[in-house]
Length: 333
Image (cartoon, rainbow, N blue to C red):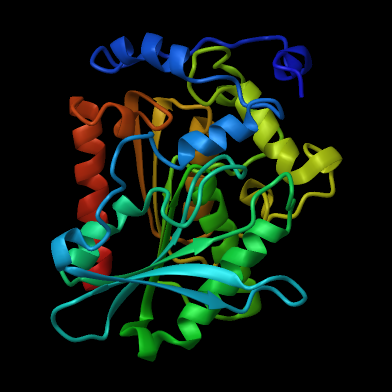
């Protein structure tokens, strides 16, 4: 896909809010480092997602507090097995709450270790067992492969909860960006298929809507952060020619779900300068209207992944603290 494809399709660039003053100085470096996502840059983006050369990967054992295991479990019918990364406390006894993690990466990059630092502290403290799923990536594996892989891993986790030391009545799902969209889609599948019963869903700046109808989906262009060009590539990789049309499943693009009743208690957060802002706010409102308990946070001046890129900023620390407080309450419920 050409770099200008999204700009050609959506020529107007609506006004955006200003960036947080602590985060704004990061943007020139981010623009220099990041290339617009395309078929030509995808391989490089995937290499970057594997980690920075010369840097040691995160210690998933948290200094010995966490047992790290990987398992191959049955995938969707007729599809390959799914790899799960299982993180369990080395001390104490269960059952504990379970956190099922779906990683981000625009539907096209990342793996089971991407973003797993979100859940690692709760395992290290003995509060939870975490399971992170390796789903197949688009465009090689378009919809419904990613969300069906996520559901298959979740179903196996629930069915094997006792062996994993998980309380089957306390399984929550969590993901950021594309992982937030996949968490929402997997939660819809779990509701509609009747298993498992999730206690909470944690959707961090979730990727929910393929239609580019919102103000925020068009307001970032060439900023170096996830903009409408990157977003168009990610959604088109997942959906192909169906993107934006009438034949897209709500499990792939949860903003399209007509009925949101019966979903688990939900945490949603997003930055005010995030491409996904409006779809996240709308989804939160519709969940609440459907009778779902929702905790919603919009962080002024924050952009996509700014909490990870600028953890020193006050807005990043506030966002992390609010999410941490919600997760801890969810794990103890």
